[in-house]
Image (cartoon, rainbow, N blue to C red):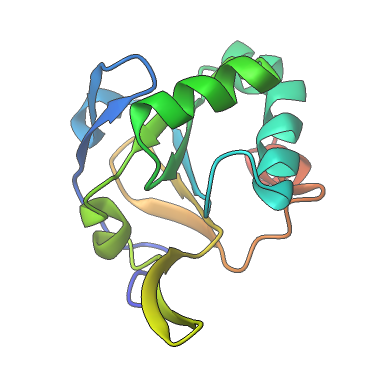
Length: 153
């Protein structure tokens, strides 16, 4: 992994679940949690999203912004959000530009065909836009609690 704790977080500009444009600069002066995950509505990704959902009030009450990011499109994110009643937005990185900039993208061989995949990695970005914590790899079970403990919430 190229990025490390203490590095300036790469800029991004993506649409969220509702089609709103979201960029890193929007969070200046506040903490931001970005969790990258492979695919909507898959077992590990569902566990991770639902644990964050179940603890969302802790993040929200402490003014911590949290976003999930995958290469799924807005429609997939909307269905996933609705199915599991997720109270936080998901970002669509269909072109995988943010995934490449955050070094969470990799190529895998699936039945002789090379496909692009996304690692499950979480970044905490501080008020000045620097990475204060990276979890790599992430175990979806208990990860929301790890983030809360790190942020001392």
